[in-house]
Length: 264
Image (cartoon, rainbow, N blue to C red; front, side, top):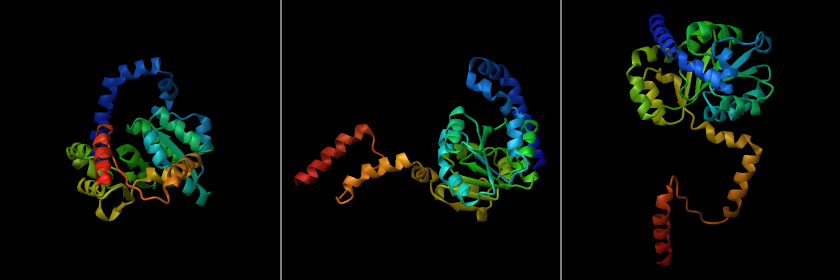
């Protein structure tokens, strides 16, 4: 693991140096980038540090708005059942931060640092997570390594790997396997996702299939739940045919075919 981590950090530092001019321009031109710059380099203000430290922290990381929405139901359930734990959230986008603050306004939400050892270490040392919960395919070697070094557990939830991503991951399977071995449990969406993660190096007994947590998040939003109920209610006592995953261009063909069947 040490050699894999060294190679990874060397590559990440090289990418940062090459891309730094662009990073600087974005920071100057875009207020959203400017507001996040310190946190992305692992510098938390005193208010954040004081709120986080000396607590039993459960750390949820979600890349953006989609991943953030997917863990809402899980995080709410944990928050209700285990009040002694403090929830800490990180994301990499402004939209992800906005949605997390909307649902967890009393919790700490900030941007995940760039995954380079000396940026990530100060943050992990402050949070010292009891459990790190990572949504979907956010595999960050330094984050994982430092969490285990601080005696935390790591869980991947709503895990997914597309076939395209799988082919790319296979190219760095040797390094990736070392990182995956740090994870204590993988909750994957489908059989295919589970198969992919095992082939990339995850231990089979650590992999379970949980389905898609994004569907659960609809139940947390009362307004959205009522909209769904009102939409479905008129059809509850009727025979229903569902055309799933249909493109607009296919609708006329389906409707004409269905009408033809009814006419017969």
